[in-house]
Length: 118
View 1 (cartoon, rainbow, N blue to C red):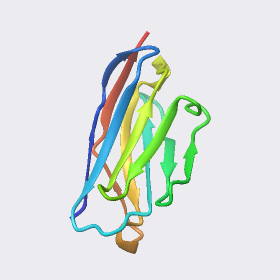
View 2: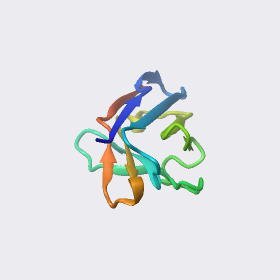
View 3: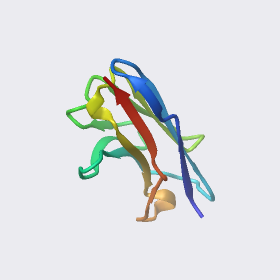
View 4: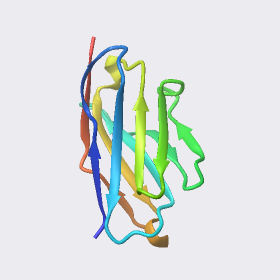
């Protein structure tokens, strides 16, 4: 059974920083893609950032230049460094992992709340 556990959310003032972590556990020998999505109240879930096993990254336009995604393959962990936070970044952030052990399944974390006050 694969589980993803997120940590690092919280309350921060505009302009501040937070670092999210997401660790995958279980019988895992390979994870292809990892990433983060977010969902603000009353809005659809949206992609924030993705990273491949080889380290190629992709970001939503709204976070480019402010957020950085990284991963540690040995620890099956993905990170999201969020700088220059804005109130519009307030959302529940979900991590995901796909292509685990060459399967087509996608696993999701439980979500962590990020609140940015103005």
